[in-house]
Length: 296
Image (tube, rainbow, N blue to C red; front, side, top):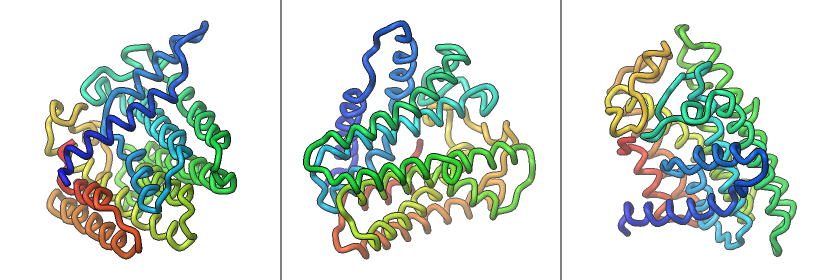
């Protein structure tokens, strides 16, 4: 299997799904639909919907019910980036190589575009109930996971502690807490929803959550590394932003080499756990391993 070719094909498929679920740009509030599309279709790895889809396939899922959840997950992830870039947060002018939403549409519309993407994510996800041949109980369980992992016990909870601790020296335990919630929660949610909608067992869903937790932490540590080793051109956003915002990271806590070793170990542990499941997915395994070597 040629991983890069497969990845490109999957990204194209995911982006077609995203376009399918975006609202029509019409009405007096048309500008917000435009800002939503600008934000959502800015490119990127599409890692979260991709992990969801691959996990779904791994457990033999075949229904289109996964599509609205894939779109919803990317909408939630995108809204968090739109808000992260705001002047009150990280104050970044570039994201994925182009101007951030608030720079293009204004700070007010940047806030509202993030709000709209979050709300529309749940409008999109609940549309899975109208797809024939889908277990409504599984959809309900998936919605619970989506809501909790995106909220105060998940991503938002991690962001709160992250913002509160900016400019302060924090412990490794606090940093791990921030990363496991701020970044890890949506990755956990993505893979868990894929397993849930495919009808996986409770034990299998728990294993998937463990795998995703390791992947999420590895992914965020790699972000720390890239923030000091990459270039703005390669990364598609400003570098040294953590230093600018006086944030404690794995690099400032443990150093570059130890941070790299942590990414490698976590990724290898995730792949090992994946192989313990009876059903395995060659592409999913390669995707997890690629996190070690990503450059952006």
